[in-house]
Image 1 (cartoon, rainbow, N blue to C red):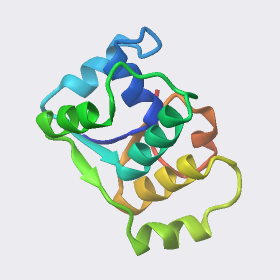
Image 2: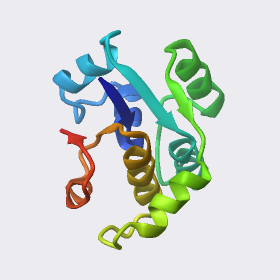
Image 3: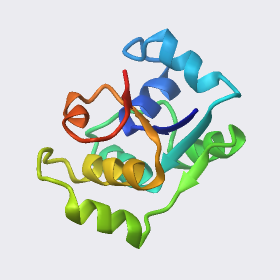
Image 4: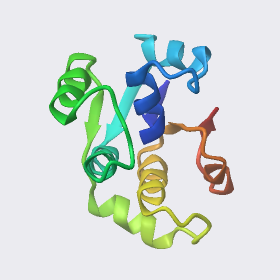
Length: 127
């Protein structure tokens, strides 16, 4: 299965946070699954960590090292993603989440997220 990891799920996983259910952590450890991480999430992490709105046990270089060591597929933003974003209904106000939804829809990925608002869109969500 191919999963796009939402930003908060990555943080919970990196921090060993109990908010991430074990079944989802196991899903992330399963080598049969292909995990995608959007640069949108890295952008969001950077903004929130630098403004002290988010705490993470790792800094940005350590997060990069971890992601590369785990062979996550790092996804950049494309014009096709923006086209999908442009056509999305305005059901969710968070611009980072809306772009993740657009990426998942464009690339045919399932999002791993606890965000209930994602289910308002025609995107596959696991939680």
